[in-house]
Length: 140
Image (cartoon, rainbow, N blue to C red; front, side, top):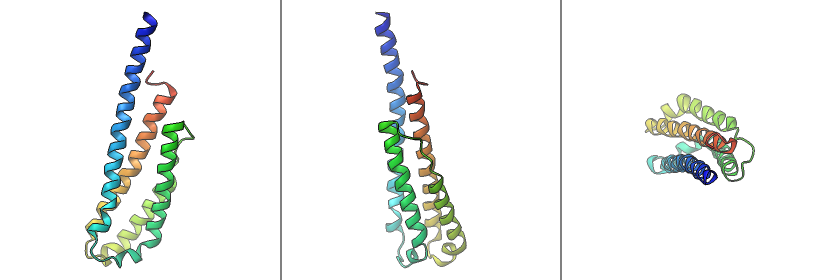
């Protein structure tokens, strides 16, 4: 009977931890939807020609980070190193401050986009940290 209670307590703690991770994943989805709104907020699509290289870099590095996050959560794969994604964000932010703030008729939109990119990076790191705690048994 005592073994069953310990097992139930362990499952309850794991359930709470996974609930927190699912909450973070839903928050991650909200951030991604917000990032997707950039194309609807910008009226002059020619502005994307200025930042094409940086946007492609963000796409590639964020896709890699999200794939690694999925593998990390599902199969306890190697930890996520999202430094490339962070560097791509920094490059886009630098371009934004130097060029887009002047060339774009709606510069605040790109500031919101950069803010969402940082939020995405932070959320990926939070989720991978929470999952690492579960896999290491900190919630057990």
